[in-house]
Length: 372
Image 1 (cartoon, one colour):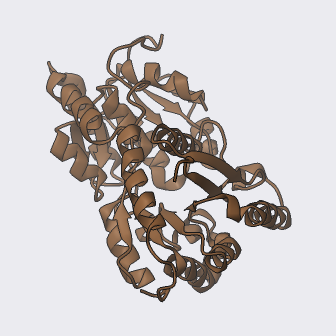
Image 2 (image 1 turned 135 degrees about the horizontal axis):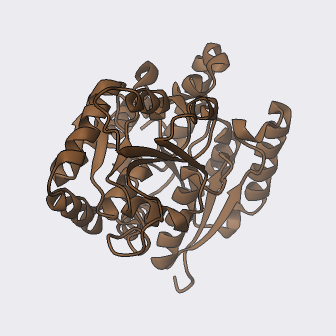
């Protein structure tokens, strides 16, 4: 085949500037285009709690985007889906049209109940919607080894690979400008949601062990913003809100350390976490203070790129900040993180991994039993 391969990318989670999902989608598309794919994004515009749109409008948006893609399925060699419980209509349509679907898994169905507690009673329905899609999929791509292991049992087949998150190593690198923030600081970059440890970070700032000359800089916004606003009276707290993607590297380079203190609410993180913020901080040569959760803790230990602390432990976080602040030389941690990402976790490398999976998937017959 002489023409370039064409891929439809479906995201029913609305991409928004400054959010990790937007970065992930943009970088995956760019890396696949570097591999020779022509990629077209089909994404909703009304999703997410922060949009404050009614559920009816979101449902209509889900339907609109999937209908638009379904009408044009014949133009594409494959569909890449950022897994979503409402993507079943497209999965069924693609199956009927014999267009292979690759589902990317970033979490488990139960995560919906953590984000939206009112929806917990509907957990069995969400599990069925996801399981049906995963069984129909030509291939599943999970962002951690733990999720991949879970997906094999949940979907009932072995068409599963691990392709984790990464960092744009042309943008996130040790050399470059630093943010004009006076004094020493540690930084958190990400959504202000409960499982990111927002409460623990703010509590750690009040612990006696937290160094008096080290600020806490928070970059991001979200449903937990009220906690941050309530703590702004502390002069050691600097909340910058959402920042442009290309402004983040300078903020990271100026930091003493970056915080990746994700928590395991309702078992949400038990299968491992691979946050963008981890790879981006390491790529900039910044030590990381990370909670002891599978995958992210393994990476930090393997690279020698920072310190591991128990999840949801404000005292341990404060002591880790003090330990780094008192270390005379952080060069080994800085070099370990930057070297690991450049070698193992650039978006270019992730694109090459997906490119191999997609080409293998296109060549695989789709008339097998969806369950295995």
